[in-house]
Image (cartoon, rainbow, N blue to C red; front, side, top):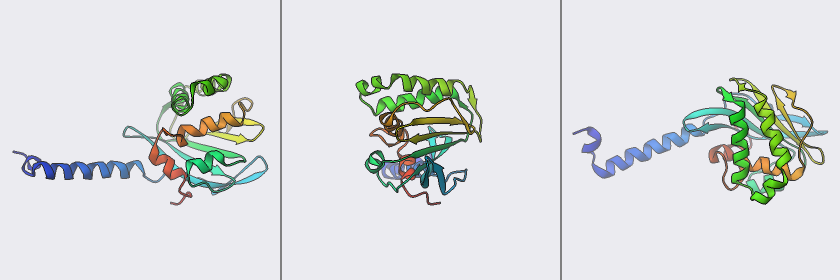
Length: 199
């Protein structure tokens, strides 16, 4: 008889609960990369709203930071917040560009009615093309999504603009919903991005 079996059902449940707590704590680990406290975009100074690490299964995929003109503490506040915004990323492991683009698209679809997604087919196609054009993102590589009202969403890879801005204001809301919709890519990452950027 193993030690775990000897503890009985209650003991085994306690061990499982401890294991789950440890997994949750690991998913909320501090970011490896440092993010600047402010950023300039569209003539505005943005503040670091929060930062966190995307954990997929047990692997850390990327660090992410959210910059906004005004503090947002809930998804509803963020989605209703006017003004420019920046999503900044740093890869923590090798990421396939095409797979990353498909995951972003799936995240949008999981949080958006199909009719609304159809309205933005050209912009979502462009998103896939941008990331497919970069076969691999290696640890330390950066990418970003900058939104300026009335101008659209500008994608960057390794600091280089990828063509012209795409989409309208509604399209960027769809992008935000990947992380801040009803079915976010990572709930712990969502919470970290809304916690004020504290270490």
